[in-house]
Length: 209
View 1: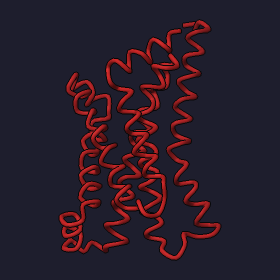
View 2 (view 1 turned 180 degrees about the horizontal axis):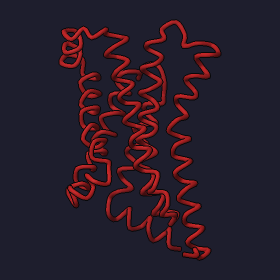
View 3 (view 1 turned 45 degrees about the vertical axis):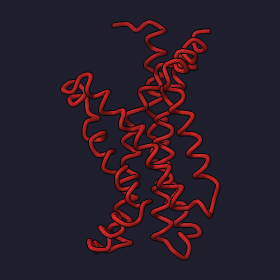
View 4 (view 1 turned 60 degrees about the vertical axis):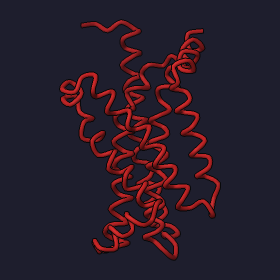
């Protein structure tokens, strides 16, 4: 079949979006390797690893949430093709964030780990965000999308809860040290506001102009 120019352009755009998603998804590992080979990870490398993976997990969750309003505003529908890859990369970095805490920081000391989860609110919230991401990652395949139908959309709205829990976890952890948690909270608020039907409709109208 000979592709028409619009069809060829759409395929190129879809490929470019997928490549961009993978580049962004792998960027945290590349930056970590560069830092490791250069100046190292500082006096507390375990804490540096936990923060690095956690921050990038939040960045990727925010970028994933930004795709839908950006698509409405720009009319560039191919952006949605990046959502699955970026969502899975976000889950990867959340998992690495949690595993670094579990293995390198606590050495599988389960008594201390459960005590942390039960008694330290920022860890409780972070652990809950991780648990809520698990079913989203598991059901990200085409097979699960078909099996769950409309329930897949309802289930994946949990990402809004995950985003709120993640930025609260981040704020409680580093609020005295830097302003970025406040920026992350503001970004989540804006991205959730963009999903209010009236606001989403306005964005779509702007995109069609």
